[in-house]
Length: 344
Image (tube, rainbow, N blue to C red):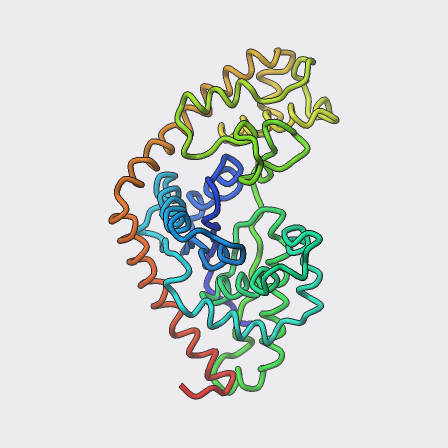
C-alpha cells in the first residue's frame, strides 16, 4: 500500500446548537491536531439535508458551526474551514462510492436504523446513503486520520471498506494511471481523551444530545456564563459523597459524568480529580465545576456571539476555505475519473 502524507479531515453537521459533548469530543481535538497535522474542518451541510431543514435556519446554523470552530481556537488561516456544499466534488465522489459500496454494507449501519426508526420506508435515500457521502468527504482529500466519537467509528470502517474495494476493483487502471500500491488510503479513526462521550446532565445513562427536549440536559457552546453556572448547579447527582477511587464510580453514572467533564475541561484525569475531591459533597464539587466551566466555555460563547454578528466575515472564511479545499479535491476527482475510464 502506498504511503500517504498524514492529513486530518473532520466535519460537524449544522443541526441544532453545539454543546459541551461536541466541544470535548471533537473541537478540543481539532485545536490540538492543528499543531501537528494538515487539517480540513468542514461544516457538512449536505448531510444536514438528509432530513427536512428550514432554509433560513440552515443558513444560520452553517455560520454558527463555523463561528464555533473559530471561537474555540481553530485557526482559519493555518487550517481549511469550509462548508461541504461549496465543493461539488463531495457529491460527485459520493455517487462513485454509491456504485462501489454494497447494499448489505449500508443495511448494517446502526445509525440509519436509529434515525429512521420504525418508518424506514419513509426515510430519504440520502439518509440511507449518508455513509457513502461521509466516505467521500474523507477520501476526496485522501485523509489518513479522522477524529470521531465512538458512534461514528462504524462509518470510518465503512470508508475503509469502500477505499479498499475501489483499490481492488480498479487495481489495473490505478496502476496504469501511475498510482502504485492503491489510490485511496485506509483512514484511521482518532478516538481519544477522557470525555470522548459526554452524557446528559439530567440522565447519566444517555448521551448529551442536541435533540433532548430539556435545555438543562446539555451546556450549549453559545450559553453565557450565568446559564452555564445554572445548568451545572441543576445537574442530576446522587446523595453519596464523591468516591476516592475510580471503582467507586461504578453504578453512579451522573457522578462519573461530572467527574469526566471536570477532568476533560481541566486537561486532567478521572483519578486526579477523585484524588482532589474524593470524600467531598457534590455541592462543593459543583461550585468548582461551575468556576472551571465558566472560565473555559464563557469566552468561547462570547466570541461565538460576536462572530455571529459579522456574517460577512464568516462567509469570507468559508469562501476562502472552499477555494483551498477545491484546489485539493479537484485534481483528485479528475484522477478518479481517469481511473474509472470517464472522459473529461
